[in-house]
Amino acid sequence: MPNTKPKRQLDLEDLALHEGATVLLRRALAQLGSGEWLEVRGDSAELAVHISAWCRKEGHRLEFQQGVKGGYRIQAAAVVPSVFTSRLEVSEIAEPGWGLAPRGACIESGGPEFAFTLRRKRDVWARELGSIYKQGVAGQWSASRDIPWSQLPALAPELESAVGQIMTFLTENEFAALYVPARFIPRIHPHYREVVEVLALQIVDEARHAEAFTRRAETGGVGLGTTATSGQLSLQTLLEEPDFTTATFLLCVMGEGTFLTLLRFLGEYAPDPVTAALARLAHQDEARHVAFGTEHLRYVLEREPERRSSLTAAVERRSRVLASVSGLSPYVHDALVVFAGGGISPAQVRSGARRVAELHREMDHSRRERLRSLGFEPEVAFQMSGYHTKNFM
Ligand SMILES: [Fe+2]
Ligand SMILES: [Fe+2]
Image (tube, rainbow, N blue to C red; front, side, top):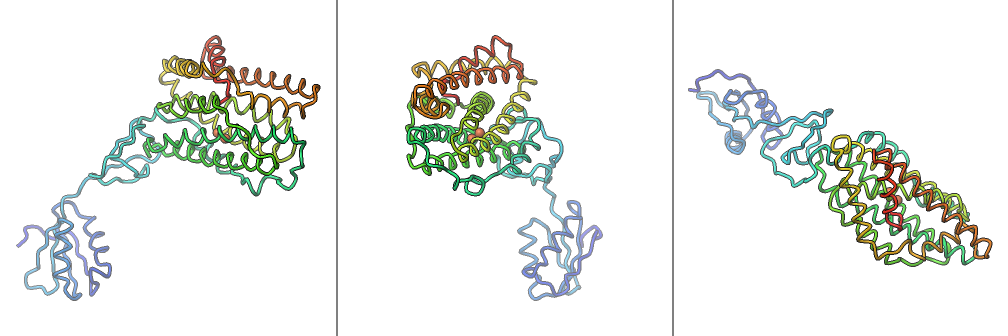
């Protein structure tokens, strides 16, 4: 005879295990501590065979109640302790064994260890993640629905081909901006899901930008322009940066920050309403990407101020690698001049060239401002902005 009184009773009536009796058994057993007894009765056909097999599989001990037809006693197996993580408080370090569990869920012990390498809060975190994500979701636009494609006029061929060249350049950069966060997402521990969500949305934004810019070039009749080696080399150094914070700094603060100025410029001198709408909508998205990058860097630098010098070194290193690349590709430079001047008459070129020179000054100015806001000294910010790739991104 078992030596303790059953803690609970369960009457299965004629419910068989394959009909769902296990749901009731599990619920009843979950109320028991390890070693406590559940008294069960039931009269479904072959219950004795099925309940024995089930108890064996679940690790519970089963006894038949002597003299009671359809009566059983089940001793609850030792409970495998679960781990709780708080939903609201984000841990400084996330355990590999928490795996893909949502924060705040109860996590069964003994699960697999995942190889998420970015598992310290300060590796990935930023303030304002919730509001950046919310704005991102609300600001999603469609390249087919929200762009006035039917209002695209036939531009002079030289102007249209300048637009096509600029769209080609933008698309290369959009791809880089898509691949960089995509490389890091699988390394970020899901405990920091807000970061993953913001980056996932960023990737969707870049896919849409690439789609829309390519479509603009193709719809204008002249098509895409040339991808310069200098641009590819510059973007390759960005794609190969192995450290998340450094990559985020180079992409979202330095690169996309510079692109904010470029997109504003393209919107201002756009020769048609389609190009203007694209520049405006992409600018809105990029502003969020820059906000994430800036907030992440702020979070890291508040905790590790010494990282400023490694970021300075990263910008310098990139500039050394790109030393053979003298400046912005002539394809892009010339296209910007024609774009901003509105054509290729000497007077238009003069005014376009002046505007492009002004664009470079504005880019430099806003990069330095952004660096200053992250606590870089003015001389350092001046130097870093100067070292930043001439290809903008
Ligand atoms: Fe973009
Ligand atoms: Fe972006």
